Length: 130
Image (cartoon, rainbow, N blue to C red; front, side):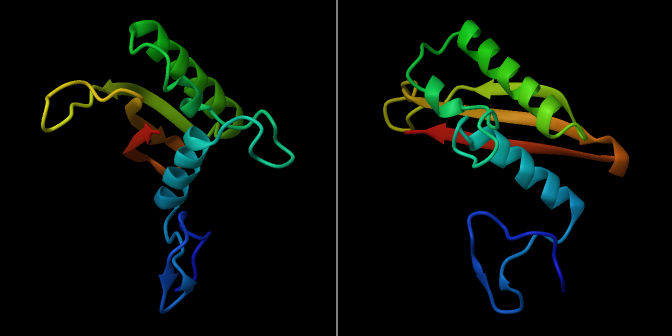
């Protein structure tokens, strides 16, 4: 079955060669994840593309840092993915399963979004760490 674009990270698939996104929901999810995980300057010909979450990993885990990250995500989505409407961004605290301490230098983000033209709601969970 034909697809829209390769799934990232690339995976081999016996029927398609490389695994492909098969639905518009998968395409929207992959585009949003790519936008969040890309640092500005990494994308050729689009130096402003990307939310740059990794550069915030060493900042204090506080409301102001999360507010800056949320503003960057909202701004980037409005500029590059206007068909996606962000409903809510949730920052989850990560704990080490053994010591029960906060994991430093990791950010877990849950984004609840809506694609109006397709009447699709979805949720994306992203873990950014060193």
